[in-house]
Length: 138
Ligand code: 5GP
Image 1 (cartoon, protein in one colour):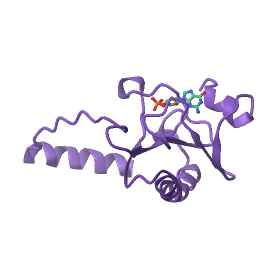
Image 2 (spheres, helix red, strand yellow):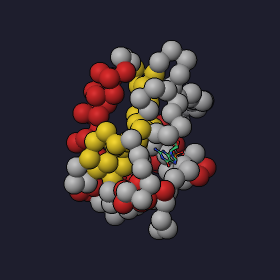
Image 3 (cartoon, protein in one colour):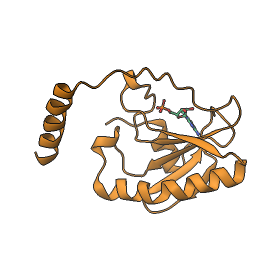
Image 4 (cartoon, protein in one colour):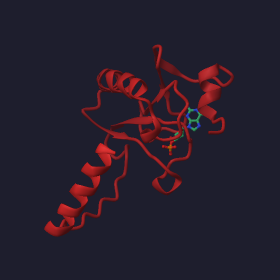
């Protein structure tokens, strides 16, 4: 995986507004926020996408996220927020180092979601369930 802007932030080559750091995780303000308090949470492990992350790095992110969400809510006064985690350019990923967005909702400011639900047919559900469960065992 090639170097990204987040590697430069991790190394200190590029500054960031850091709000939290531990052995495995760094959290800092997004420089182009969708709303006030928009935070990025990244593993120090260099992986482009979530499915490539080690269990240890994933666990460290999982431990930090709820605490960081509480802090964002307390600091901004927001009562609603979205967690966004993009993988792949077709899925709106621009920086190819795993990152979670914490995006507080403040009036109109926040994440805009285009949600177009379909219908899950039973036969398709059965096939999908088996395929995904089978892949988990592989
Ligand atoms: P993505 O679309 O990949 O999920 O989001 C990448 C995010 O990184 C964007 O929200 C963008 O504003 C943020 N970002 C890109 N470059 C920088 C930077 O140099 N510093 C900070 N703090 N955020 C950045």
